[in-house]
View 1 (tube, helix red, strand yellow):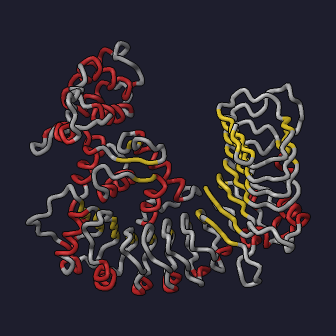
View 2 (spheres, rainbow, N blue to C red; view 1 turned 90 degrees about the vertical axis):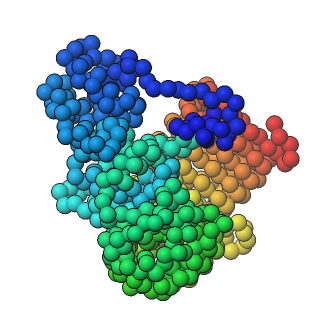
View 3 (cartoon, rainbow, N blue to C red; view 1 turned 135 degrees about the vertical axis):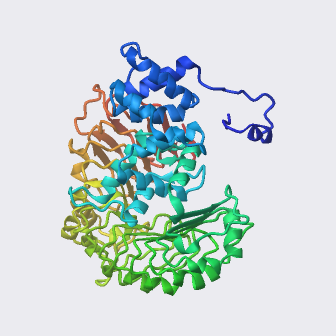
Length: 569
């Protein structure tokens, strides 16, 4: 099923009989406004508001988005008839140049506090239908200085998250279809953002007509180019863009392979002119290197080279002492980061996810105590390499962390010093040992190391790969370790017994390539009680000696997959 506001889209989709939803009926529109403004399904308890409500419905042309937005504004006025009347008589409605629908949305914009106005207006840099991640948007706001505050101890990221939720609750943002973690703006909200920003923002995308435009480049502070039309404009007007010397934001994401920006000229000639940049984002496969001139951008807070073909990040990046976010995710050719990482004292987010060739952790990362995002680390035997105890001071880590090379940890005290349990913001953790099981590995040592690597109690997902010890840590059976939703055990070749607590919210359990595993039980051993109350899926693969399962009743189970050798049950 495809929904659209344009009949031309229906024709392109070869729809034989499009269904026109039409406008809301007066009754439905009145009910939607009541729900949004007074948390009631109608105005029966507040008859004095009905006349004003009907006027708002007329001005909003019975458009749900406009009604909800106006409803959120009216909610702050409660049921004060005079306040509703003042809003209805606002001079905003008298503009002869805009439709009532856009005016209704503009009224909701003017009702925002100042700090939310600038956050929303900044989103004009995104084209219509652009899908964005909440956390990624907050990092941009942070880099622009919109989240600096001194009245609370709340982190900028958390403050930005709360601001985002406020804008979302007022319908300035909406969920993207199919992914609960992604968002978009309604086309009309995008129009609203463009209408309120003035001359300091300039966006080039496939839905903008740039023919014959004579831009005041010197005024621009925020610039984005997305799509093939924007790419052509860059190619034709590169020298004109040299006049944008005071840009604070440069965002570029051109994905159409048929149009190639002359990136070598952009990187070598344009970027050196932009000494005041705070935000630089270049995400395009045809970009193969990071220019050395980037080391002069002392104001830079946000640097994004994700989804490019760069092979290394040059040493000069470590001179960007104001840098807060360095994003290089999905750089499949990346093999090296700067060695002098310790100089990036303000770094808060280092996203290296999906970089399979990057297998070395820069020295000094353990001293960057503001780090919240650190995708992965690699433990080394060399004294000059990264040690697991270097994680000790990184107490602000959040979301996901992958630790590889745990087989190189030979001192359980170093594992204890890593203080994984103290990193309460972590939700997903991968713990990886080597896939090579040779005489250099001592199962007893690995038992002791894993026991001391106690993870946060509130962890949601835990993946254990190629652990060489003979038993799992005692904290697996600790009732306080109770927030786990997904547990995967793979290649744990020496474990014969798997004993856990009854993980009250565990939904997925997988054991793979555990060749000597004989028994799986929960800590109470009672086969008649209900355990794992939310466990929906169990996958047991290549565990040929597993002969006893004493977990109690699992009534929530929906999927059970057993594989022994090549036989599936």
